[in-house]
Length: 229
Picture 1 (tube, rainbow, N blue to C red):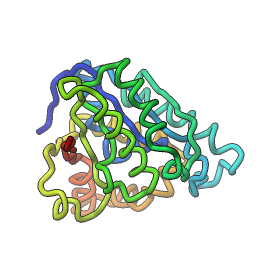
Picture 2: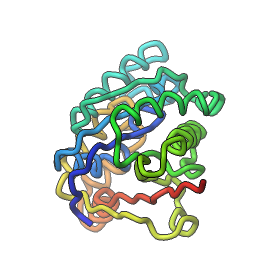
Picture 3: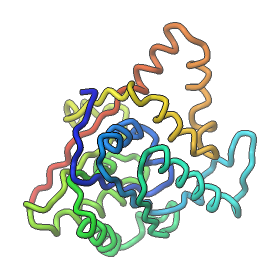
Picture 4: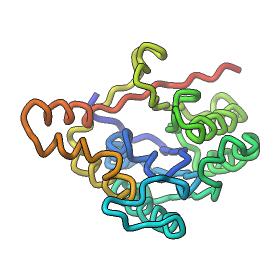
């Protein structure tokens, strides 16, 4: 599937700056280019992140403000013009009361009335903050009448996701917006180089190695999370 149709509203629910872009930017861009309005709920500013830029340009005190600016830059690249910051503390989302986090997510859902809610697939986000945020998102959606619930698109971080969850419901070809996707990812300068330096080397190398990386970059996978009442 290479194209998406305009839908009522796209809501992204993630705990850290860059979660909305790494592995998902192409799909978000396809939706916003089709005319879908998009809102991002970001739980934290990623202030406990270990990457400080390469070469280093941040420190523990400056990292939160830097990552906020990077997130705002990424949102512009994604076409997301509605950013909501929850102000939770990085690496402690799992210790928050999930019902209270769900309260805040629910309020946004009721306001923007999304048709699709994109988050990590519950229990398969690897990072505790990822799983805690997606768990709270599911709680929020479950509170709505069935006919008002957005469809939950989950992305899985685990390597063997297909063997666990089965074939993804959506595999999107985002090659038509690859440049925009890369711009959104690279907007997170403090994190990008430390996480994707090998990928950049492979892209520069060319040949079969570059083709393999491009194959990965241009395919984004999502599983629908089906709520059991």
